[in-house]
Structures are given as C-alpha cells and as structure tokens.
Image (cartoon, rainbow, N blue to C red; front, side, top):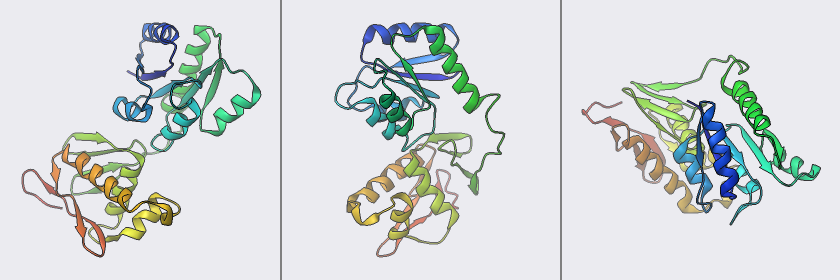
Length: 235
C-alpha cells in the first residue's frame, strides 16, 4: 500500500484529503506537528508528500529542500498561492507538481496516481536496481536501505553514502577527508562534530539489523567497516 504524507496546517483540509485518499486504497498520514517535518518523513517513509507552502515555523519550500537531501519521492505542493513565481519556486526547490487551492479532490487524486505510476508503476524506468554486498550485508542506494538476513532498515542519504563508501573500499580505511568530500561539497565549512554524529547514527541503524561495532574508528586515519554479527561471524 502506498503511503501519502499530508503536510497541511488547515486541519479541516488535511482531514478531508486524508479521507478521500484513503477511500482509494492509499494510506494517508497527516502531520500534526510542524516543527520537524523531516524527522516525521524519515519515520513514516512515505511514497509521496502533499505539501502546503504556508506552514508554522518553516514554510513548505524549506521542508521540500530538506526532504530532497534524503529522498527523491514525489512531492506535490498544494497551496492558495497561485502566482507563477510560487510555482517556479516550488519546482526549483525540488517539487514534482503544483495544485492551487481551492481544488477538486478528483484532480488531486489524478495527480497522485499519475506521479505514483511515473515513479513506482507502469511508467517507471525499467532500470535494474544497484546494490553493494559483503558477506550477506546488502546496501540498496536507490531505496536508501540496508539488509542482513532478511532484516532491513531505512537510511538517510548521508548514512547511505557513508556505508556505500565504506563498502566500496572494504576492508581498507577511509580517511575522514575522503568521507567529508563525498558527503559535503566543501568540507572546510563542516563542523568537526558533524561527521561523528553521522557515524553514530549509522552505527545505530546497523545495530537495528543485528550488527555491532560495525564502524571502527582508526585513530588519526579515518574509519573502516569491521562488521561482527550477533552470532559472532565477521566480515
């Protein structure tokens, strides 16, 4: 079942959208807290986002750009702003479509179905999915997932990029500088703790599928993938 995340601060509109979308066999999840939409997105892992522009704290353009750092899922703006510049800005921030309020629910549904077909269904490019493997540990970069023995966990874009680099160079040490250059274009502007935070989060994700002490810190050199499973086996 496709999951549609609705980010709309008008509760009445959000509830009506949810009800209408659910009738057609989708699972609509409505945001009720708007302080950290990215965190909700990563928790829900929706196949599509319906996003308003006028939101508390940060506007829809901001959250669209934040979602684009971790996902390429379809994003459709739904807004009362009908000017050409608003639509141009939405597309510039990474949106796939734009619907102006007031709208007909049939139009919203048609655009949802069209974008889902384009990305996941009949019209999706028939490209073989890439994966990287080491002794049963499999990384799927396109879907931002890692799997071991039938267990899988979702990753952020940075977590996926970090693991991809470590798997590609396994069992060699990857320098801190090489990782920073891969994750961020200009490493000189990245706080010293930023990489450590990403490594810690990646270790936690690996722990969820039964791998511990996976990212070894090699003092003065960088990081190395050294995976030990729960049953004691090692890569």
